[in-house]
Amino acid sequence: MATNQKPFHQIRVGSVRASLWENPSEKGPFLTVTFSRSYKDKSGQWHNGQTYRGRDLDALIDCAQEAKAFIRRHRQSNRGVA
Image 1 (spheres, one colour):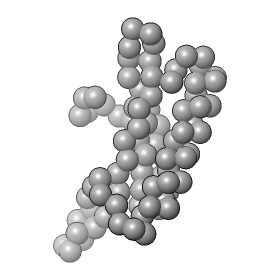
Image 2 (image 1 turned 60 degrees about the vertical axis):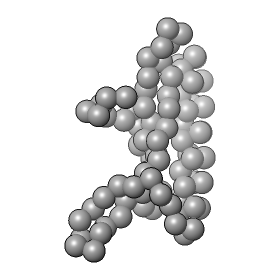
Image 3 (image 1 turned 60 degrees about the horizontal axis):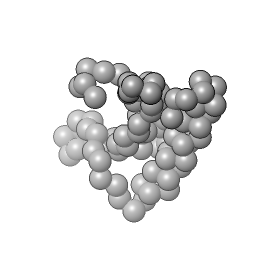
């Protein structure tokens, strides 16, 4: 995944974001998911991290379930994109 590539689709639940990426393969494109959490540091600057506090876990679960549903719908509508 190139650093300048944009996600195929994004889902946000609270401070948690799922980024869905379309990747090529010999059998056709497939989707993968990365998760991140937005937060402000002490100076007010926004950052993204991959660690989650206990209170973030419900949002992470909801985000993962929405990503799974999106991939399922996308696969059904495109036959073969996983």
